[in-house]
Amino acid sequence: MNGTQATLFRSACLVHAPAAMVLDPLTSVGLAANIIQFITFANSLFSEGHEIYKSATGVTAENEELELVFRDLSQLSESLQKASPSSSASSSSSSCSSEINELARTCQKVAEELLSVVESLRVKDGGKKRRRWHSFVQALRTVWEKERIIGLRNRLDMIQKQLVLKLSFNIQ
Image 1: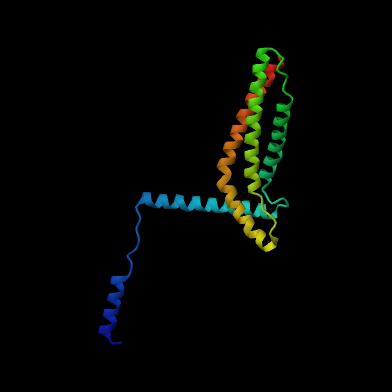
Image 2: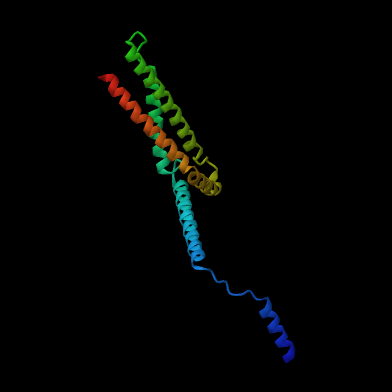
């Protein structure tokens, strides 16, 4: 290649070379925030996946505790419905007991919905190789379902408070 050809080649490369990318300050801050958010999400995903993979039950410890507590709550609600006073009681007591029964039914329904969500997040046995992949998938589903679980927990907490209030009022 002679000198003229080399000069033409260099100038052609410079014409087609991308210019240095310069971002305005707000775009830079937005990009940095997105990168940090992605790293945080990936970190939580991998830590959940690792916890599920190491777990003997195939769920996170938090979900296992939720399952235990809300299974018990569901059974208590069912027992409360069965133990309702007879209809021969006074009208105010009957009204209160029907409200207690309705709250107990609602509590049981929401607890069973929460239990079904938690149960769907359990890793099914699929062998050691597949368990890693299934743990990762269930960790992803756990992260996606977190808001739904929190919403159901809040609903159950509200129902439980109302149920305790009605029961204490009924005892007096």
